[in-house]
Amino acid sequence: MQIRELAVADAWEITPVAWRDDRGLFLESFRHDTLEAATGRRFVLRQGNTSVSRKGVVRGIHFADTPPGQAKYVSVAHGAGIDFVIDIRVGSPTFGTWDSVVLDSESRRSVFLSEGLGHAFAALTDDATLTYLVSSTYNPAAEHDLNVLDPQIGLVFPKEMGDAVLSDKDLAAPTLAELLAAGALPDFAELKAYYTKDIA
Image 1 (cartoon, rainbow, N blue to C red):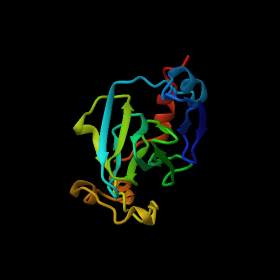
Image 2 (cartoon, helix red, strand yellow):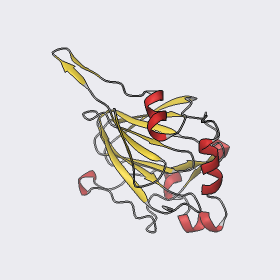
Image 3 (spheres, helix red, strand yellow):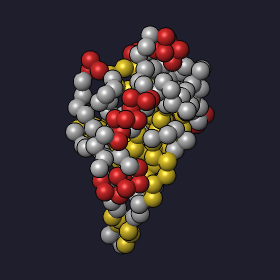
């Protein structure tokens, strides 16, 4: 398993090693001790989710109140998509920037993102099946949206994806500037202390 930190601090790409033979393949898609050693983060699984999207569907940008927020370990079980991590933590050196990883059922890569980071996913194929393990259970009152088309963020979608298909809720989401003015974004310093609080 190879783990690489993304351009957005506190987010990582995980590339598993697959063992193949005439029966198929085997790989470790998640391993807590390897992840913790590479990231300095302890990931406690509280819920697992699956979404299936047709080509062109964009979900996000989503984030949760912090603390505790919601760390995510994201993979694609079928098809392909682009996973976006957006730094919306006020005071972060990479505030307002983003990075992306292509997740698909060939490479079997995953993305691990810490609490307080924004997350979005764009389906590159029909029936793109996203699975994500999360560190807290769903709490609708603590969930928030940031407009995925906000030009200040400037996410780039591949032309072959076609027109972006968004929910009404995601289309109506506020911009980064609006959330910042409202004091509704996570605080970087508070989160950095939270990330290390349970690591001996």
